[in-house]
Every structure is written in C-alpha cells, then in structure tokens.
Length: 417
Ligand SMILES: Cc1cc2nc3c(=O)[nH]c(=O)nc-3n(C[C@H](O)[C@H](O)[C@H](O)COP(=O)(O)OP(=O)(O)OC[C@H]3O[C@@H](n4cnc5c(N)ncnc54)[C@H](O)[C@@H]3O)c2cc1C
Image 1 (cartoon, rainbow, N blue to C red):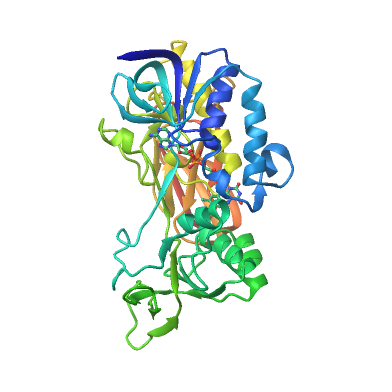
Image 2 (image 1 turned 120 degrees about the horizontal axis):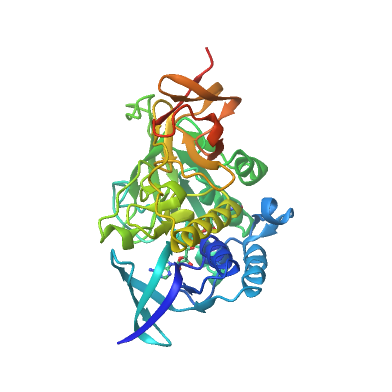
C-alpha cells in the first residue's frame, strides 16, 4: 500500500480548508490538501450570488469569484493539492485512508489534521415530514446545485419550507428564472436567515414569509400537487383549524445545515451543544492533533469567517506540531442562559494573550446584555439593542481579564435589568 507523509493534512477544499492549507504552508509546514470533488472551493462554486469577500477583500464578490481570490492566495504557497481524493477513515493516531482517482488507495501519515469537510443539509426524513414522497421535493442546496451548475430549474410553482439563508437566496433565484415562489414558511416566530437576505430575496420579489407555520402534509403521488400547512402556537404545537392548502409542483426544504463530522464520529470524538464536534482551546478536538474548522465545526453565515477559522486552526496546528500540548489547560467556557452553540470548550490564549469564543443567541433578544462571570464575579459585559439567532457572535477575551486562570467562565445573555 502506498503511504504519504505530511506535517499537516487538510481534509476538504472549501473556504475553511483553503484558509487552513494556505496558512500552514505559509508557516513552513509541508501540507497535503485532499478534496473529494474535482475542483476546490466547495459550496462557493454553486453560490453565484454576491455577498462574499466583504471582510477579507473589502469588496462584494460572488461565490466563484471569492473562491478564485482564495485560490490565488493558496498558489503563492507550497501546498500539495489532490482532487478527487476522498478520506474514508481517520484513526486516533491521525492516520487517514484515502481513495484517490489518480493514485488509488493511499494511507496518509500526518503530524496534525484539520477537518474542514463542510456541512450536510437536513432532509425530509430528518424533519419527519409527513405525507407521500412524490417527485418534486428537493433540499435548497440540491436545487441550487441543479440550477446554478447544471441549468435545471426544479419546478414552476415552488413552496419553500424554512427561512434559512439558502432558502431565501433560492427564492430569489427561482423568481429570476421565471418560476413562481408561492411562499416561504418558517416554524419559528422569527426569521432563520439574515435580515438582508429577507429584504433582498423575499420583500423585493413580493414573496410572502409565513412565520409560525409549517408543512403538515405533502400532497401528490407522482409529483407534488400541493402542501397542507398549519399554524403553530408559542410552544410549537399545531393550532387546530389553522390549516391552509397551497398548490405547488415543488417543495424546497431549507431546514438547516448539519456539521459534517462523520469521520470523527467513528473515532468517538466528543460532541458539542452546537451539534458539531467538541473543540477545546485552539479548535483542537478531543483527539490530540486533530483540529476542526468551518462548517464541519459549526455552520457559518459568512464564508469569510469560515476561511478565517481555517487560518486560525492552522496556526494552532502548527503550534501543536512545534511542541505545544496544553490546549485543554485554559479556563473552561460554560453556557448558562440564553446562549446556543458556545465554542470552544476552553480558552487557549495566543502569545499576545488573546482568545476567542463564539456563540449564537438562543432566541431573538432586544436590549440584551452578555455577561461573563468567573467565580461569581463579572469579568466582561456587552450590551446590544438587538441579538439574533441568525447571527453568530464572536468575542475576544484578553488574559488580563481573568480572576483565576483555572476557574470556569460562565456566559449568560439576558435582557438588561
Ligand atoms: C446557499 C448558501 C448561500 C450562502 N451565501 C453566503 C453569502 O452570501 N456570503 C457568505 O459570506 N457566505 C455565504 N454562505 C456561507 C458559506 O458559503 C459557507 O459558510 C462556507 O463556504 C463554508 O465553507 P467550508 O469550507 O466550511 O465548507 P464547504 O464549502 O462545504 O467545503 C467542504 C469541502 O469538503 C469536501 N469534503 C467533504 N468530505 C470530504 C472527505 N471525506 N474527503 C475529502 N473532501 C471532503 C467537500 O467536497 C467540500 O469541497 C452561503 C452558504 C450556502 C450553503
């Protein structure tokens, strides 16, 4: 069997993997980037709308344009890239088995691994959608790929379930291509995606957003004929008599992305409250030397942030290779009230004495205050008039704020008293 050695193995060539490979190579490590598809860029290739690159390049780019700029950065460094090469297993000793179109079956022996395998879409089965399974039910990403990369419009009269960003963006794409988007239904009483996407993709096209409403049943045998929707009360229970039937030939599901960390599950990696793998200081998973970045860690709203997280994970992987082992020593981070998807599990300070944490507000909150406490004493406060679950929050903590290096830090978000 053929084997290959590398300092850093990066799995996945989307925004996060490109950031990781570029940074690790810049730091002088030997890098192998494996991508199962036939080109780099990941999900960016099918996102032909603008909205990328604002923080990295200070200009608004489409997904493919953003990907091009990232590839130009990678080309400046010395990193080996293998396309059409899928990692099929990872072991706790970090060795990876790969099936490559060009080189066949390979074993990679790296010193550190960065998992950047992106996310998966929730399917009809995953949300327990009732009714038949006729033709005409697609996930939003699937419909996007078919339309933007293969030129197939999935329907003429389309109902969208879920108000996540992918669904909102697809509502506009379908409209621009001449399809009628009947409505977008959202089970929560608030929007799932970014406000700018609601304004630009629904309001500008006169597409109704139905909050606190879901699809109760899909109607149709060979092909979708319509959907029966139902209103939901504050506890998310169906309201009797609130059913409304919408005629349509297609149902598009935009009901959430799930971190794709299957490769870690087989080696019993710990799971976080965000549904992705647990990471400790420096984005290192529960397996020493194995780092996670991008959507395979937690779903990012912005590709720029996925790229930056890839860069950060690579810096930490290089520190690990250079002998640093205390990634789990810094203070633990504990979510108390109003916080979802808090990461990492503990703080690992950089040489400049800085560490970052991120989270999403559990619910929309007006006049909310974020409070960080250690041993019952407040060490940091942050007030904002609006907190939204659709926006991932990042917070930098400096070491000098800590009262005791080893005590856990409790994080709370609540309405300001
Ligand atoms: C529809 C949609 C619209 C968006 N709009 C915007 C926007 O307007 N602005 C913005 O900033 N962001 C936007 N985003 C978010 C942004 O695109 C993502 O956050 C970011 O691109 C994710 O990058 P990633 O590298 O984590 O994952 P991905 O891009 O999914 O990359 C993962 C890569 O890993 C590869 N892979 C997976 N498993 C393996 C394996 N076992 N072996 C080898 N390779 C593997 C995959 O083939 C893929 O190429 C949007 C996202 C979507 C889905």
